[in-house]
Every structure is written in structure tokens, then in C-alpha cells.
Length: 434
Ligand SMILES: NC(=O)c1ccc[n+]([C@@H]2O[C@H](COP(=O)([O-])OP(=O)(O)OC[C@H]3O[C@@H](n4cnc5c(N)ncnc54)[C@H](O)[C@@H]3O)[C@@H](O)[C@H]2O)c1
Image (cartoon, rainbow, N blue to C red; front, side, top):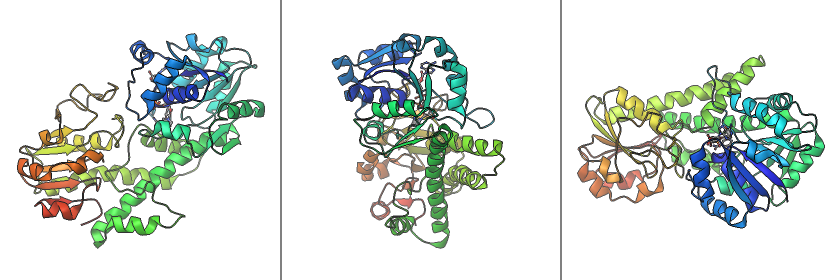
């Protein structure tokens, strides 16, 4: 079992630290936010992620998981140091590497001889070698080990990954990192750092492409009178295509796809390659937000001015508290620009913000937030479903109908049964189906 330091305790770092402790390693997780470290040390989880609390508490009880403020306190004895730091979108679309670069500068003199720095953040091609240069330590190896977990199933995905990718110039270091994961059953791909870095971007951009593709097909379905649910069923049985990421909706969002697709376009641009395909994928997505707004406007008899719109769902998808780049917030912002008043309900978001307290970034300001799905309905010209929370399926729709000013549902996630809604007296509008 190894001594591991994890720098950054967000969705990736906290999950990584918790499951590495779970499989037997001795882990110290560091963050710069003292309050977060204090809460984690008490076993309180600042984000919503199924199964994470059990793992963290188990690690604390077993004495294999600790939390400290600042990386200095974590790395002195560590054989492996994971970087799980933010790489947000920079002004020019590329990933902002300043967190990684600053941390590498700080860690350089402090790392134990013979340790391995493992980068789990999503970073452009060349970053592994950049970190090695900044560390300036001939006795420390740097390895790329991109993370593929999905928020909402981060613990499951970490314990049962489809693959583990390790990119390294130093094959001995790659073998040591592979051994860290020996308890995890998954194919291990050892490759060069540039390929590992590109695998992460290529994977996320491909998934975004699938969603944009099915959104475009859904839009076409509306024009030609086809039902996208049937189309997806017919496509998905083909094993070469599959069903995953073929759910039409209001567009993709979240903390990764928007920034990672733009970063990949930028990587291509810098390399002199015109990635027009990915430009198209991004354009389809931006248009999809607008298309949802037009759909809602038309359902509200052609005008949103002075109308109240009831919204179910704010997070970027179900089973997470993450509001970063949420399509729901994109759509709501546009509704408000067109004169609507929006009242919203989301099981993860109260007036004080989501449990992590990191979401609102001002975009919830002025929104009426309700404590239950019915609280948003009184007087609304339409009910709009923007996140696919399962609890919305099981609401009392007779009550919803009676509360709304007009019995209109715009289901941007195709969550509800159109026939059942129409039987209850709603004018129902889905995506890609009539
Ligand atoms: N969220 C995902 O689903 C996901 C999946 C795969 C990969 N990634 C990538 O992983 C990286 C991290 O993503 P995330 O969603 O976990 O980010 P996050 O914003 O949730 O967490 C980052 C954490 O790092 C901490 N931090 C910032 N500077 C620090 C420092 N100098 N020392 C210690 N801690 C510091 C922050 O306080 C925060 O807790 C990004 O590159 C992201 O693209 C994210």
C-alpha cells in the first residue's frame, strides 16, 4: 500500500482520495479552502455525490484518509501526488493552466525524492512535460492519468472504470502508477503523455458530439413529423452506435463539456488543424438553448413579456448539485431577457444555493426558488422541465394542472409521458416528438 497525496478536493480529487483510501492506500487530501477541509475532516461532504459520504467516513474511521489545508502539509512523505486542480476555460478558449503551474512551482522543492506526480486534471497536450519542467526535479517523474468519472456516479465510475489511461515518458513510473490501481478491475492503457492528454479531450468531445447529433436529429424529427424516441431506439440497438448519450434535451453543459470542447478546438487551431466538425457540434449546442426558448415562447402563446414561467430543474443534469454551465441556467437567463419572470424548483438548490455553496455565481439572483415542485406553479403560463430529476415523474399532475394559469408543459428532457399528460388536459411539448 502506498502513501498518496491528493491536491484539490473537488468532484475529482475528493472521489479519488476517498476510493484510493478505500482500496487500502494511505491518503492525505489537501485543499486551500480551510472550511471545506474542516468539514471533510468531520466526515461532512460539501458536494452531493452518491456513495461518497460512506467512502469518506470509512476512510476517516480506518485512519487511512486525512484532510489538510495547503499542499505543503500533504506531500512531504508522499510517494504519489495527484493533481486534481481546476483547469477552467481561459479567455482565448484554451484551458487555463495557472492552478497547475502555480502548484508545480510550489511543490517543486517539497516533493520526496523518487515520488511521482500524477496529473488527473484535464489539460492540453504538452502539460505533463510542462509540469516536469516547472518542478525541475530530475528525481521526480510526472505522469498523465486523465479522469473519466461522471458527476452523479463518480464513486461507481472510479471503482469500475471502463479503462485506466496512463501517459508517461518514464515506463517505470507508469508501472508504479498502474500498481496503485491493482485492486481495480479495468484495462490499463500505458501510452505517451501527449496521447493520454488527447484521449481525455477526444472522449469528452465525442460524447458532446453524440448529444449534439441527437439534438440535431430531434430538431429534424419535429420538422418531418418523426418521433426521436423511436429513432433513438432504432439506432441504439445497433451495437456500433449504442444508446448512451443519445438523449435529446436542452443542450449539453456542466463543468467539463463546454470548456473541454473549446479547449480541443483551440488545441487543433494551435496545431494548424481546422476542426470544423467540432465547431459545428458547439454551434448546434448553442442553438439548442435558443431553440428551447423559442419552444417555450411559442407555448406561451408567442410572448414571454410579463409572463411567469415555472421551471423544474436547475442542475446541469440529475443526481448532481453542480450548476456550473448548466443548460437550465442558460435557458432561464434567456427567458428572463425576453421579459419572463421565472420561478424554479430543484431538489438540490435552495435559496441559499446548492449544498456545495459554489453554484449560484449570481445567476440565481432574482429567481424565485420554491421548496417543492408545486410551489413554482401558481399563476405560471407554462411548466418547463429542464433537468431530468426522477421525482418529477411522480408528481400529482392534477394538482399541477390546477395550479398553473395555463395547463402547458414544455418538457425539454422528454421525461414525461406525452399521452398521459395530454389525457390529464395538458398541452404537452417535448423535444423531437409531437
Ligand atoms: N467534475 C468532473 O466531472 C470531472 C471529470 C473528469 C475530469 N475533470 C477535471 O478534473 C479537474 C478538477 O475538476 P473538479 O470538477 O474536481 O474541480 P472542482 O472545482 O470541483 O475542485 C477543485 C478543487 O481544488 C481546490 N483547489 C484550488 N486550488 C488549490 C490549490 N492550490 N491547492 C489545493 N486545492 C486547491 C478547490 O478549492 C476545489 O476544492 C479539472 O481539470 C476537470 O476538468 C472533472
